[in-house]
Image 1 (cartoon, rainbow, N blue to C red):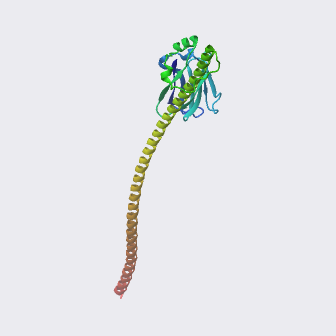
Image 2: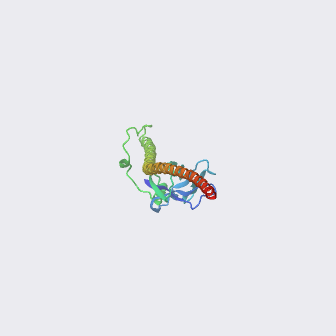
Image 3: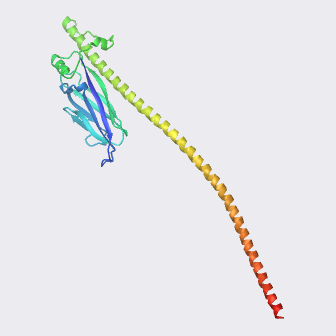
Length: 269
């Protein structure tokens, strides 16, 4: 049988930073797809935060399987989903990337979990959790080394073959799920990388525009400096001319005074 679970997170920017200077709040969750209640098969979910957070290993043993925290940048957290004792698959492990931004983030991914040959009791729980019956022969490739004979008696021999086949399928299911996780993570990393490239391109274009404006302003300043130097030289020359005229005026005034004195003396004679 196969059941789907959903991993995702929501993130939004705070109006003002927290006491720890965190700028964003976010919530990571594990839940059933389309509202299915995975509590019938999930025993607990453990969220492993970085050691910088108090009590970094947060255990959620009942729905909602969610964790709310704050940060100033994106981070990776590990998530362990433990199943009830009837499930032969004890747990699945995920590495989830929480990314934040100026806009509200609301994103999730679906994960398929396969439980081959479940017991009757566990099959009922799977159905309650939204599980579906699938054809494993079509879902997985044929494995040439999947069957090993251990005993000679027909009944025991068949049981041994079934046990080995089930273990092999469980291993294949886990490997496929891990590959899906890596592909999803890689896809997200590629999206983030493309976003960074686009932002870098915009920054380069902005820098080019700023440089062009700066160059134009520098040319304008050089023009003003050149003209100012010319005007300054003209002003200096004019001031020199004025000083010379003042000196000449003083000489002329002295000559006039002398002539006046001579004229007075002549009048007296």
